[in-house]
Length: 272
Image (tube, rainbow, N blue to C red; front, side):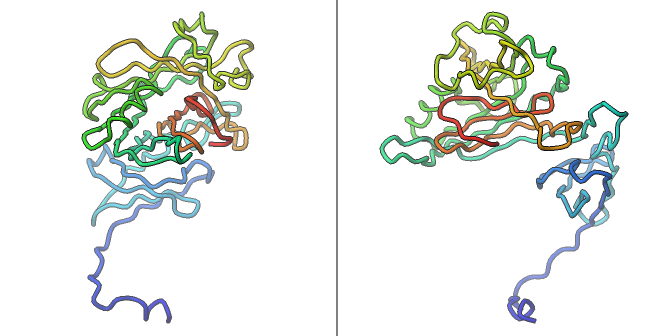
């Protein structure tokens, strides 16, 4: 009764939408996310969201789903289930660390990070050479020049429109030694500590090569790879790339062989 009495009687009525609910055999197959998606079979846009232990697709009246969200809800013993999540990009206004206040401050830089549209390598051996894994666009039309220089100094990122992968900043991953991956100028920061060595590849670590938009000398950074050890180990994380907020900085992470690879640029924080 209290809830009903609190409703504004002058509020306009809602529009009924169609919902298609897909039950799953394993709740972990459904990400805790809400996102726009597109049903290619029916050429219809919809909103996908977890609903209980199912995946709900919300579309306009009369929406029909082809049910293609989960590509492989089960797999033979010993093989990982590949979730049919097409991946999604992350766009937000980025922050900059202010040494005077010791806090992050907004910059008006609109950063967009896209996962690579190419098929994701599913073996560690595939990363023994640099593999493009994400593309980054920066809209700096309203940004302070100091903020733009901050992201250029940390990553080598240059302004680029979010319109064409070929003109964006490129992130590529490699697993190996500095010489094996051809890292021309290995970083010497504390972020490249022994803790970033890969536990499953003795003497090797993950590297990221950041190629700036418009060309130019690439920049190299170390990478921390966190396995999904707390989850069902047969579960592949969704193929996505996104900005990750840290206590003193912002960085990028990307799915990489049953784990997430996070670009290290400075003081890190545990967890992801």
